[in-house]
Amino acid sequence: MNQALTAALVQLSVSDDPARNLPATRALLRQAAQGGAGWVLTPEATNLLGASRERLDRILHVEAEDPTLAALREDARELGIWLLIGSLSLKTGDPGESRFANRSFLIAPDGGIRARYDKLHMFDVTVSESESYRESAVFRPGDRAVLGRGPLPVGMTVCYDLRFPALYRALAQAGAQVLVVPAAFNDTTGAAHWEVLLRARAIETGCFVLAPAQCGTHPAHAEPDRRPRRSHGHSLAVGPWGEVLADGGAEPGVTFVTLDPAAVLGARSRIPSLTHDRNFAGP
Image (cartoon, rainbow, N blue to C red; front, side):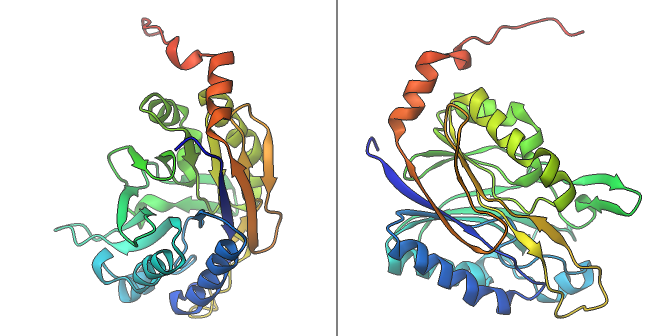
Protein backbone atom coordinates (compact mmCIF):
# COMPACT_ATOMS: atom_id res chain seq x y z
CA MET A 1 0.00 0.00 0.00
CA ASN A 2 1.49 3.36 -1.06
CA GLN A 3 -1.40 5.69 -0.23
CA ALA A 4 -1.84 7.59 3.02
CA LEU A 5 -4.04 5.87 5.59
CA THR A 6 -6.08 7.25 8.49
CA ALA A 7 -5.57 5.28 11.69
CA ALA A 8 -7.29 5.73 15.04
CA LEU A 9 -5.93 4.98 18.51
CA VAL A 10 -8.65 3.93 20.95
CA GLN A 11 -7.85 4.82 24.56
CA LEU A 12 -9.69 2.82 27.23
CA SER A 13 -10.01 2.63 31.00
CA VAL A 14 -11.21 -0.94 31.44
CA SER A 15 -12.39 -2.61 34.63
CA ASP A 16 -12.00 -6.19 35.89
CA ASP A 17 -15.26 -7.22 34.14
CA PRO A 18 -15.11 -8.04 30.40
CA ALA A 19 -18.89 -7.84 30.00
CA ARG A 20 -18.91 -4.24 31.25
CA ASN A 21 -15.92 -3.25 29.15
CA LEU A 22 -17.07 -4.53 25.77
CA PRO A 23 -19.90 -2.03 25.04
CA ALA A 24 -17.61 0.98 25.59
CA THR A 25 -14.93 -0.53 23.37
CA ARG A 26 -17.39 -1.25 20.58
CA ALA A 27 -18.80 2.28 20.78
CA LEU A 28 -15.32 3.79 20.36
CA LEU A 29 -14.62 1.48 17.41
CA ARG A 30 -17.71 2.83 15.70
CA GLN A 31 -16.71 6.40 16.51
CA ALA A 32 -13.31 5.76 14.96
CA ALA A 33 -14.79 4.22 11.80
CA GLN A 34 -17.30 7.05 11.47
CA GLY A 35 -14.40 9.49 11.70
CA GLY A 36 -12.82 7.92 8.64
CA ALA A 37 -10.29 5.51 10.12
CA GLY A 38 -9.38 2.53 7.98
CA TRP A 39 -7.31 1.04 10.78
CA VAL A 40 -8.35 1.11 14.43
CA LEU A 41 -6.09 0.07 17.30
CA THR A 42 -7.04 -0.76 20.91
CA PRO A 43 -4.73 -1.03 23.96
CA GLU A 44 -3.24 -3.91 25.86
CA ALA A 45 -5.78 -5.65 28.13
CA THR A 46 -8.76 -4.68 26.00
CA ASN A 47 -11.01 -7.23 27.70
CA LEU A 48 -10.07 -6.60 31.36
CA LEU A 49 -7.40 -5.40 33.77
CA GLY A 50 -6.76 -5.79 37.48
CA ALA A 51 -8.44 -9.11 38.28
CA SER A 52 -6.90 -11.71 40.58
CA ARG A 53 -5.50 -14.92 39.17
CA GLU A 54 -8.36 -16.86 40.77
CA ARG A 55 -10.95 -14.69 39.06
CA LEU A 56 -9.13 -14.90 35.73
CA ASP A 57 -9.25 -18.68 35.97
CA ARG A 58 -13.04 -18.52 36.43
CA ILE A 59 -13.94 -16.02 33.72
CA LEU A 60 -11.36 -16.23 30.93
CA HIS A 61 -11.84 -18.28 27.75
CA VAL A 62 -9.66 -19.93 25.16
CA GLU A 63 -9.33 -17.93 21.96
CA ALA A 64 -12.02 -19.81 20.01
CA GLU A 65 -14.61 -19.14 22.73
CA ASP A 66 -13.76 -15.61 23.83
CA PRO A 67 -16.78 -13.24 23.60
CA THR A 68 -14.71 -10.05 23.25
CA LEU A 69 -12.70 -11.45 20.35
CA ALA A 70 -15.83 -12.70 18.60
CA ALA A 71 -17.62 -9.35 18.99
CA LEU A 72 -14.68 -7.25 17.80
CA ARG A 73 -14.09 -9.50 14.79
CA GLU A 74 -17.74 -9.00 13.85
CA ASP A 75 -17.36 -5.23 14.30
CA ALA A 76 -14.33 -5.18 12.01
CA ARG A 77 -16.31 -7.04 9.35
CA GLU A 78 -19.40 -4.85 9.72
CA LEU A 79 -17.40 -1.60 9.69
CA GLY A 80 -15.00 -2.74 6.96
CA ILE A 81 -11.90 -1.78 8.95
CA TRP A 82 -8.54 -3.22 9.84
CA LEU A 83 -8.42 -3.74 13.61
CA LEU A 84 -5.51 -4.28 15.96
CA ILE A 85 -6.80 -5.68 19.25
CA GLY A 86 -3.92 -4.57 21.45
CA SER A 87 -4.21 -7.66 23.61
CA LEU A 88 -6.69 -9.96 25.31
CA SER A 89 -6.15 -12.08 28.40
CA LEU A 90 -6.92 -15.65 27.33
CA LYS A 91 -6.60 -19.22 28.50
CA THR A 92 -4.01 -21.00 26.39
CA GLY A 93 -5.37 -24.54 26.38
CA ASP A 94 -1.73 -25.69 26.54
CA PRO A 95 -1.27 -28.97 28.44
CA GLY A 96 0.46 -28.47 31.76
CA GLU A 97 0.29 -24.64 31.57
CA SER A 98 -1.86 -22.93 34.19
CA ARG A 99 -0.87 -19.40 33.20
CA PHE A 100 -2.68 -17.27 30.64
CA ALA A 101 -1.70 -15.64 27.34
CA ASN A 102 -1.46 -11.88 26.78
CA ARG A 103 -2.28 -12.05 23.08
CA SER A 104 -2.57 -9.39 20.39
CA PHE A 105 -4.59 -9.83 17.17
CA LEU A 106 -4.50 -8.23 13.74
CA ILE A 107 -8.01 -8.47 12.24
CA ALA A 108 -8.76 -7.91 8.56
CA PRO A 109 -11.84 -6.07 7.20
CA ASP A 110 -13.50 -9.43 6.56
CA GLY A 111 -13.21 -10.28 10.27
CA GLY A 112 -10.47 -12.85 9.73
CA ILE A 113 -7.46 -13.13 12.03
CA ARG A 114 -4.38 -12.23 9.97
CA ALA A 115 -1.79 -12.39 12.77
CA ARG A 116 -1.44 -13.28 16.44
CA TYR A 117 1.30 -12.25 18.82
CA ASP A 118 1.84 -13.37 22.42
CA LYS A 119 3.70 -10.77 24.50
CA LEU A 120 7.35 -11.76 24.76
CA HIS A 121 8.62 -9.82 27.75
CA MET A 122 6.92 -10.12 31.15
CA PHE A 123 6.66 -7.07 33.41
CA ASP A 124 8.44 -8.38 36.52
CA VAL A 125 9.62 -5.20 38.25
CA THR A 126 9.72 -3.42 41.58
CA VAL A 127 9.01 0.22 40.86
CA SER A 128 9.06 1.23 44.53
CA GLU A 129 8.59 -0.28 47.99
CA SER A 130 4.82 -0.02 47.52
CA GLU A 131 4.55 -0.88 43.82
CA SER A 132 5.68 -4.16 42.29
CA TYR A 133 4.49 -6.37 39.44
CA ARG A 134 5.07 -10.05 38.60
CA GLU A 135 3.38 -10.59 35.26
CA SER A 136 5.14 -13.92 34.74
CA ALA A 137 3.32 -15.38 37.74
CA VAL A 138 0.03 -15.06 35.85
CA PHE A 139 0.93 -14.91 32.12
CA ARG A 140 3.30 -17.13 30.19
CA PRO A 141 5.55 -15.34 27.69
CA GLY A 142 5.44 -15.84 23.96
CA ASP A 143 8.46 -17.14 22.07
CA ARG A 144 8.43 -15.51 18.63
CA ALA A 145 8.36 -12.10 16.97
CA VAL A 146 5.52 -11.46 14.51
CA LEU A 147 5.34 -9.32 11.37
CA GLY A 148 1.70 -8.84 10.39
CA ARG A 149 0.60 -8.19 6.82
CA GLY A 150 -1.99 -5.49 7.42
CA PRO A 151 -2.75 -2.16 5.76
CA LEU A 152 1.01 -1.61 6.13
CA PRO A 153 3.59 -4.19 7.24
CA VAL A 154 3.30 -4.10 11.03
CA GLY A 155 5.64 -5.27 13.76
CA MET A 156 3.52 -6.49 16.66
CA THR A 157 4.65 -5.84 20.24
CA VAL A 158 2.97 -5.19 23.61
CA CYS A 159 3.81 -2.78 26.45
CA TYR A 160 6.96 -3.93 28.32
CA ASP A 161 8.43 -5.14 25.01
CA LEU A 162 9.12 -1.43 24.44
CA ARG A 163 12.25 -1.65 26.62
CA PHE A 164 13.93 -4.22 24.35
CA PRO A 165 15.13 -2.37 21.23
CA ALA A 166 16.60 -5.43 19.52
CA LEU A 167 13.05 -6.71 18.96
CA TYR A 168 12.07 -3.54 17.10
CA ARG A 169 15.22 -3.53 14.99
CA ALA A 170 14.55 -7.12 13.96
CA LEU A 171 10.96 -6.28 13.02
CA ALA A 172 12.02 -3.24 10.99
CA GLN A 173 14.72 -5.20 9.18
CA ALA A 174 12.12 -7.88 8.41
CA GLY A 175 10.00 -5.26 6.63
CA ALA A 176 7.87 -3.49 9.24
CA GLN A 177 6.88 0.07 8.37
CA VAL A 178 4.69 0.45 11.47
CA LEU A 179 5.51 -0.75 14.97
CA VAL A 180 2.57 -1.13 17.36
CA VAL A 181 2.95 -0.88 21.14
CA PRO A 182 -0.49 -1.32 22.76
CA ALA A 183 0.03 -0.79 26.46
CA ALA A 184 -1.22 -0.40 30.01
CA PHE A 185 1.80 1.57 31.24
CA ASN A 186 1.54 2.41 34.93
CA ASP A 187 1.55 6.03 36.08
CA THR A 188 5.04 6.05 37.55
CA THR A 189 7.02 4.61 34.65
CA GLY A 190 4.69 6.14 32.08
CA ALA A 191 5.36 9.69 33.23
CA ALA A 192 9.12 9.08 33.16
CA HIS A 193 9.70 6.83 30.13
CA TRP A 194 6.66 6.34 27.86
CA GLU A 195 7.15 9.12 25.30
CA VAL A 196 10.94 9.00 25.15
CA LEU A 197 11.01 5.23 24.58
CA LEU A 198 8.38 5.38 21.84
CA ARG A 199 10.21 8.19 20.07
CA ALA A 200 13.50 6.29 20.38
CA ARG A 201 12.03 3.16 18.78
CA ALA A 202 10.73 5.29 15.88
CA ILE A 203 14.07 7.06 15.38
CA GLU A 204 16.08 3.84 15.54
CA THR A 205 13.96 2.07 12.92
CA GLY A 206 12.51 4.79 10.68
CA CYS A 207 9.04 3.38 11.42
CA PHE A 208 5.75 4.87 12.48
CA VAL A 209 5.08 3.85 16.09
CA LEU A 210 1.44 3.55 17.17
CA ALA A 211 0.79 3.07 20.87
CA PRO A 212 -2.86 2.89 22.03
CA ALA A 213 -2.98 2.96 25.81
CA GLN A 214 -5.05 2.33 28.88
CA CYS A 215 -5.69 5.37 31.08
CA GLY A 216 -6.87 6.42 34.53
CA THR A 217 -7.99 4.32 37.49
CA HIS A 218 -9.37 0.92 36.55
CA PRO A 219 -12.59 0.04 38.42
CA ALA A 220 -12.66 -3.18 40.43
CA HIS A 221 -16.31 -4.21 40.21
CA ALA A 222 -15.96 -7.89 41.04
CA GLU A 223 -13.21 -7.58 43.65
CA PRO A 224 -13.68 -4.16 45.29
CA ASP A 225 -11.15 -4.94 48.03
CA ARG A 226 -8.31 -5.20 45.51
CA ARG A 227 -6.00 -2.22 45.11
CA PRO A 228 -7.06 -0.48 41.88
CA ARG A 229 -4.62 -0.24 38.99
CA ARG A 230 -3.76 3.10 37.40
CA SER A 231 -2.51 3.62 33.85
CA HIS A 232 -0.67 6.55 32.29
CA GLY A 233 -2.80 7.07 29.17
CA HIS A 234 -1.39 9.38 26.48
CA SER A 235 -1.84 7.09 23.49
CA LEU A 236 0.86 8.25 21.09
CA ALA A 237 1.47 8.21 17.36
CA VAL A 238 5.10 8.90 16.45
CA GLY A 239 6.44 9.57 12.97
CA PRO A 240 9.49 7.86 11.43
CA TRP A 241 11.65 10.92 12.15
CA GLY A 242 10.73 10.73 15.84
CA GLU A 243 8.14 13.50 15.98
CA VAL A 244 4.96 13.08 18.06
CA LEU A 245 2.07 13.21 15.61
CA ALA A 246 -0.81 12.76 18.08
CA ASP A 247 -1.33 12.42 21.84
CA GLY A 248 -4.53 10.91 23.27
CA GLY A 249 -4.34 12.74 26.60
CA ALA A 250 -5.54 11.31 29.90
CA GLU A 251 -9.18 10.33 29.20
CA PRO A 252 -10.84 7.55 27.18
CA GLY A 253 -11.48 8.45 23.56
CA VAL A 254 -10.29 8.24 19.96
CA THR A 255 -7.20 9.90 18.46
CA PHE A 256 -6.73 10.09 14.69
CA VAL A 257 -3.47 10.13 12.74
CA THR A 258 -2.53 10.01 9.06
CA LEU A 259 0.12 7.49 8.02
CA ASP A 260 1.99 8.21 4.79
CA PRO A 261 4.32 5.35 3.78
CA ALA A 262 6.51 7.86 1.96
CA ALA A 263 7.59 9.21 5.35
CA VAL A 264 9.16 5.84 6.18
CA LEU A 265 11.15 5.81 2.94
CA GLY A 266 12.17 9.42 3.52
CA ALA A 267 13.47 8.86 7.04
CA ARG A 268 15.38 5.71 6.08
CA SER A 269 16.97 7.30 3.03
CA ARG A 270 18.26 10.17 5.17
CA ILE A 271 19.72 7.87 7.85
CA PRO A 272 19.98 4.29 6.53
CA SER A 273 21.16 2.84 9.85
CA LEU A 274 19.12 -0.35 9.39
CA THR A 275 21.67 -1.36 6.74
CA HIS A 276 24.76 -0.45 8.74
CA ASP A 277 24.94 -3.31 11.26
CA ARG A 278 28.40 -4.69 11.99
CA ASN A 279 29.41 -7.85 13.78
CA PHE A 280 31.54 -7.26 16.84
CA ALA A 281 33.25 -9.19 19.57
CA GLY A 282 31.62 -9.24 22.95
CA PRO A 283 32.87 -7.02 25.78
